[in-house]
Figure 1 (cartoon, rainbow, N blue to C red):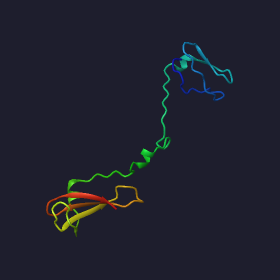
Figure 2: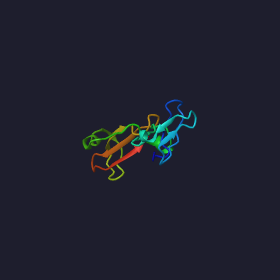
Figure 3: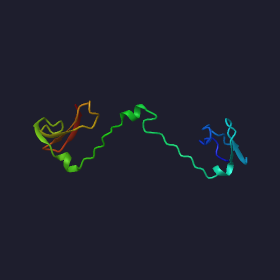
Length: 123
């Protein structure tokens, strides 16, 4: 057996078998059952961790909701009396999206009706 540290268990007692290279057989250290090393020659062990197995601060900050907007969706919105910081126009269009977690405020996107200047704020 050439794989060291693979997860191979005894079929009789369930103990983890030692994997030793260049031996004809593998013996269980608990119940002494003997296995032919050829049985494990082409064995491939694949392990996977679940998404929540290793929690981290960075993963917690990732948003569960992915939002993709089309260009024309950004240009639509209600018109309000708000002064444009770029040109001083008194009207802007706005729309809101919930981009952060549900317990936080929505993001407001503003577009100037005169010069097209865009900015956003988080409520």
